[in-house]
Length: 169
Figure (tube, rainbow, N blue to C red):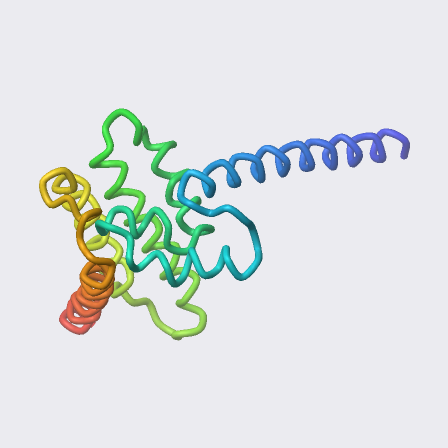
């Protein structure tokens, strides 16, 4: 009995250490993306409203929904994103699309490829946006134009995803 209690205690301490590392890494990630506070109105405003005005589609995805952005970033890093960033970026978005689909399937009642196709499209747009960022210099554009472009690209991505799904569904 004493051995089981000791093992549970060791598991609890290991979990708490992992959680502390995770929170520290997440806060560092979020601060680099302009989040000064956590879990308050300013945090949610930055992650769900201000993100649309980011200059470049690739910057939009770095800020939008910080929890998912961190998840995608962790996948990206595990796939070798710091060295060769194009393939890890695309794979990160595909994996995120699959996970979104798996979460939605119980509610939708059937498998759909629309989100996977949309996220694959977002990955391609992210790569293109990052490649063209030095040429386009969107950081000098008015925020309203960046917002219109980012919203438009997200809508086009989902439209393409739903059209492909209808084509094969």
